[in-house]
Amino acid sequence: MTEHDDIAEIRKLAGLATPMALRVAVTLGLPDRLRGDGATTEQVATESGVSPVALGLLLGHLATLGVVEHTPTGYRTTGYGTALCTDAGNGLTNFLHLDMAGGRAELAFTELLHSVTTGDGGYARRYGQDFWADLAGNPGLRASFDQQMTDRFRTQIPGIVAGYDWDRFPAIVDVGGGHGTLLAAILAAHPRLRGHLLDVDPTATEALRTFTTHDVGDRAQVTAGSFFDPLPAGADAYLLCDILHDWDDEHAHRILARCVEAVPRSGRVLVIEPVGGRHADTEFDLAMLVIFGGRERRVDEFRALAAAHGLVLDAVTDLTGQRCLLEFRRTG
Ligand SMILES: C[S@@+](CC[C@H](N)C(=O)[O-])C[C@H]1O[C@@H](n2cnc3c(N)ncnc32)[C@H](O)[C@@H]1O
Image 1 (cartoon, rainbow, N blue to C red):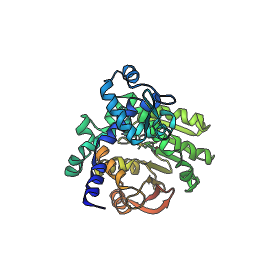
Image 2 (cartoon, protein in one colour; image 1 turned 45 degrees about the vertical axis):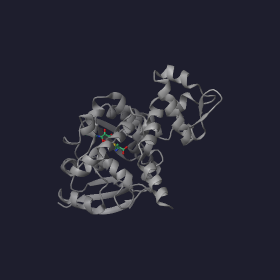
Image 3 (cartoon, rainbow, N blue to C red; image 1 turned 90 degrees about the horizontal axis):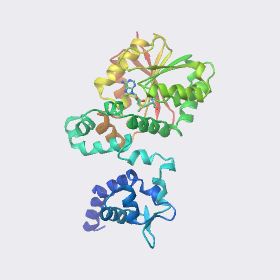
Image 4 (cartoon, rainbow, N blue to C red; image 1 turned 135 degrees about the horizontal axis):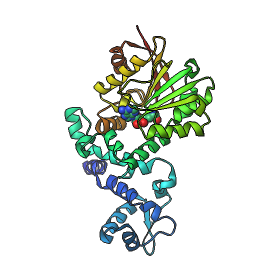
């Protein structure tokens, strides 16, 4: 490799043109619109209400990426580009669409310098309020986030359900359980168990629908509320699945304190996450920082966090290639 090659490679890695072009293409729905025979630039510009000249520049760049290709009259989506269509079901639409939770959150990376300087998230600096407040004020964002959470777990849930002895816990509270797909799968696999999901509304209410669909509605309860407030007390296990990594240490301590307050002496606090140094990749780690001011903690960091609440780490179980379960019991 020559020095010239190195510079070209670094420019390619660092340039924002391609990441933004893909995001704008998805936001405008171009991969869907240009499917099949495609269309002319002018047609798409008129339908989308955008500048034909600027759209031509965008399509020209997308063609160099292989996402669209020239036709005699305009452009059409390639086979490769169909991965960006809304019905591809691969999570890319949410990740890239600028008006969906994932795509909007990714732009918090423009505040990475702030995050690295301060250790705080960049989302609030960019959007004027933190991620959760932003979702609370925008039902469309909220719905896209919940869908993203459900989609990301589709392939993980069987491993999580099969990889741990859930039958030990007759009553489980899923703290911040989202739409409830994980708890529903646990209950479906273990007919003796009862579950109680807590999340904010409207997500909590949607979870009721999930339990009914999975035919476990008679063993599942839902509470709409905050995990910074007292939790439903007395269950055998309090599950925090992908919760603590969304929060800085101060908030993580507050959530754990609520779990310890609610769990009986013989109960357990169960944390499922991609653990730093075991599963978490560096890109995702930075995303948790800029979006939430959180991070993928390492086992020792979890141990220290929990010790402050009289919790001791009993076992670490690998559930899937991406996540493991940390089981904590109370010391007193
Ligand atoms: C990353 S998602 C994980 C959802 C679910 N546990 C899963 O693994 O699919 C984080 C969840 O925390 C919930 N959450 C955020 N702030 C909350 C709060 N203050 N009280 C209760 N739930 C909250 C969100 O609504 C969201 O469902």
